[in-house]
Structure formats: C-alpha cells, structure tokens
Length: 236
Length: 236
DNA sequence: GTAATAGTGTCTGTGAGACACTATAAA
DNA sequence: TTTATAGTGTCTCACAGACACTATTAC
Image (tube, helix red, strand yellow):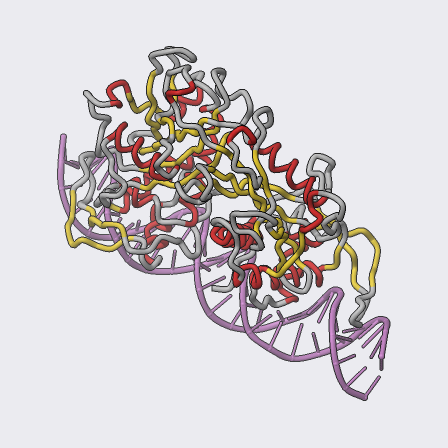
C-alpha cells in the first residue's frame, strides 16, 4: 500500500464485474448477451458492467444481475451470488486497462431475461454451446472457472437446492447433480444421503406427479443448512 | 461491459494487491509490516502495493512477495501463492477508491524478511496476535478469510507439504495440521492416511533424529500430487 | 531407568456403492 | 400391458477413528 495521496502516483484502472449466471434445464445453461458494438461486436459475452465509484464491487454485481435478469439478491430470492475471482491480465480488454471481478450466480431459471430492459438481448444457452462459442474478452476462461466452482460446490454445500427452485422432488434434485456433474448417480443412495443430511431439505407434505409418468413424489424445499457434512463426492 | 472508449465515461480506481503470507513455526504465523505514514500510521498491515499499469494483477502479487521476502514464485521455490478474493468496499481506504485483490501465500519459513529492502520493517507474528491487533484498512477481514482458506485447503490438497519445507518427517507434517487446524489428530492414523495417498509424499531414504528426543524418523519430500483424494477431514 | 518420538497392529462402526425389489402413476 | 418414476432393503467393502503396543533415541 503506497502512502501517497497524489493521484498521479498510482495507475488508474477501470473495474468491471462479470457474472456467470448458471441454471439447469435439460442441460446446464448460462446467461449471455450479444455485444452490439466493438470490440467483439456480435460475439457473445457474459453480462456485466463497470463498477461505479460510489458502490462496492459486490453491490455492483448485485445491481448488474438485477438489471440483466430482474433477480434481486437483496430481496431474498432463491438465487445465489458469490465472488468467483478476479481477472487482471494486462491486455484482456483491447481498449484500456480493465480489471474484472467475476461472480458466480445460481438460479432456478424461474425468471427469464426481461425484454425492454438492459437485458433485452440476453439469452440462455447451454454451457456446452458457450464453451464452443468464441466468447468476448477472456470470458471463456471465466466460464470455465465458474463451472468448475459450481461443480465443486455441489459436493460440500446445499447449493443444488438453489438450482432446483423453491420446491422440488428428490428426483429433480438428483437430476441437478447429474446435469451439473455430467455423471450418473445412484438414485437410491442419493435419496438416503440427502435425507440423512440435516438441514439439506425439509418435507412440505405435498406430493406431485411427474409430467413424464411415474409414481407421485414427495415435494421438498430447501433446509436451513448450507454445508454438506460429509460431502457428496463426485465419481472418481 | 460498457462500449465507450472515452475515459471520462467510467470511474477510475486504484488497484492494489495484499498478501497474507502464512508459515508454521511453534504456531501459525503471518508476515506483517508496520505502517510508517498515514493513514493507519503505526498500525500493522499486510504487505502489498499498487498494481502497475503494465503488469497483470497476479504478476503484481508475485512482485510484491518477492520485494517483501525475497521469495520468488517463478523460481520454483517451495512457496505457494493463490488468489484469495477481492475486497471492494467503498470506504476501505480513506484516501481514495481502492480495490484490493488479496492473495494467500504459504511458505516453510526458510526465508526471513530481508533487511535493506522494502521489507526492512516486515516481521512474522502469530496469527492469534494479528487477530488481536487492530490491523490497518480491512486487513483483519482479509486475514480471517485467508486463514479459513488455508485450513480448508489442507483438507483436500497437499499444501501442508509446502508449509513443511523441502524435506520433513511425518511427525513434522502432522504438526502442521495440528497447528493450522488447532486440533489434535491421531498420529498413527495420520501416518497411514498420508502414506496411502498417492503423490502426497515420497521417501528420501534419509533418517533424521528429532532435537527433542525420540527414535530417528524417515525423511520425506513433497510428491507430485496436488489433490488429496479422499480428503483428510477436520474433526467435526 | 524415564521421556519422547517413530512406527505397526487391530478392532469397530459408519457409510458409500452396487443392486435388487416393490409401489404407483400415465399411456 | 409397458414405461417411468418413487421409494426401500440389503449386502459388501473401504476406511476413519480409537487405542494398544513395540522400537529406538536422548538424558
């Protein structure tokens, strides 16, 4: 930390936030926007924007998320948002020196991007497609880090319940794990594990019939716990 | 991401790096510097400094670490350095808007801060003392995050071997865990666990006698592995 | 001898994984 | 009926944890 007060003594940066918002539908999806101007015009990019001088970096992330999707983290929605990491390569933005703080968001996909807002051009695409796409800036690298973080977090936190929505069956929760991890999980063992973990899910008393047939399933909602002890391990 | 090229369209920030460098001696220690000027003159602070306009944020962290301690991450020392998180509260620096990218460093304490360098006023103090101290800026918060990260990483990575130095006995490695976690661990079970984990340690063939008596112990060095599968769990 | 550390043996309980099985819905 | 899902039972193997024990050094 320098001790100077003179602005000319330290380099000046722009600081942005970029948000990797993930959800699970048939497959793992990510919210992207199409850039309308240079640089990277026409390319897909992660939603984000400049941090304002009078707001914290975290607040900027929440604001951008709200502007792009209408999801309001402060308003106790079922959405999770956490800092992922900071990307500070010298030439990551061709215009000027920009340091970007990336965030990982998880949502149950209830809310589609709202037209008529900043998010008019936002869309959900599969993560597989996004990885194939030539994303703007270093957003491909950020996406990879976010997906890996999400996969790891399902192991030792109850965040899958956030991806599953306000209420869900254990079959639906099970699919979240299979889709995010891209692996098969024994449903019977998974059920026992989840039900044995205090604070993961709690029963609502309601039963629901699957649209694809089968017996009616008990509906659960998120429990109060956040950690999974012991964790659910990915297949080795 | 804004599309403007005009500097006046986006707020200007200073970006710093702050480094939480930990080592294990009798207890867990952290490298701190005493501030010589305002603000927070006389207070202890984490080593760090401004990111230059032509260096990446990661490079700035490596440079600061080298300047403060002589440890050169590029030069294949036994030191670990990873990004911890970014602290971007509006008023975290009373002089101006500063966003700080914090790093967690782990070292085996071979190298003491060098006098006659930037680090002339640097010193190792126990983490317990640092937590009691009124650190400058939001460095207390950063320290807490770093210690928790280090504790968690010992569970599922082989980083303890980095804290233990170039070569070590299993008894020494065992103490690293007990000191960082602040718990007791059964030595017999720990030994079996470590030796059964492929890539954690490898024998050097050398034996060493402890200065505090006891039978001579086999000396090991770090293995090539980085992950601990399955992890060593902290006591619940 | 005692103290301290290194290293091994062994038992037990828990729990993950594999897999079989029954039950209940839709088509 | 078949198909798809929900939910339970059970067996086995691995392993973490507890703890006893021997071995080897310094003092």
